[in-house]
Length: 302
Image (cartoon, rainbow, N blue to C red):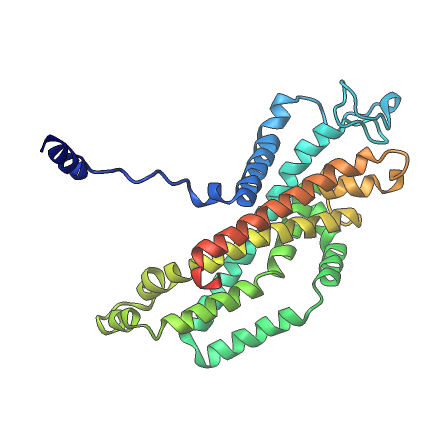
């Protein structure tokens, strides 16, 4: 009898469910990508204060030195410390890619929302403009715009600020089309849903319908596209700097470091490894997180 009562009491004790780790921790690849990205952000954010070495100080006596205790990543052909240039250049490269992503997301959201909400001739006209931009060769067009307007921008806003805004506008202004198509398709589908038609019947204004009913339901694919746009913008900025059309030589970026190291691939390979690996790890981490967000925010994709 006592054993039966004990078992009855034990069965009534609530059992706490086992604690589950967050989704990104259960996936080793996603956890590794997130950890790598956080380490990169911490390095470029706190590194210049923790490693207070000037990235522009020239010392020809220390030119092309291999990695050592005084210079952990070696020096370039001017004797400048590569680690200092890598940390400061990461700030600029990531700032350009993030700002370009914000521009492309803003333009894509605006165009896609207007086209999907109003439809008819507005949709047709905006989508034809989108198709026109999709048909343009992006890299040659970016090179042409930066080549034509780079010097006026430098003279008007300064050598660093002018080229920064120009690169952000060019990269962001040529990568909004996929976001516009995503938002337009989402709006066209959501307009037929019952809750949107009910809001229209209750007298909600177009702005209220877009803000409270349409935009929140399309932000999942947009967030995924934003993560992928950061990686694409980083590669585009690195390409421009590598071709000599990006920031001036005294402004270190990861792409500029690769451009300066192209003549020393055999004699000083350490000049290429650090910025190349930084670009590779950053883009791979961001794209991996984008894939993970896609699986979480779009269950139908899996």
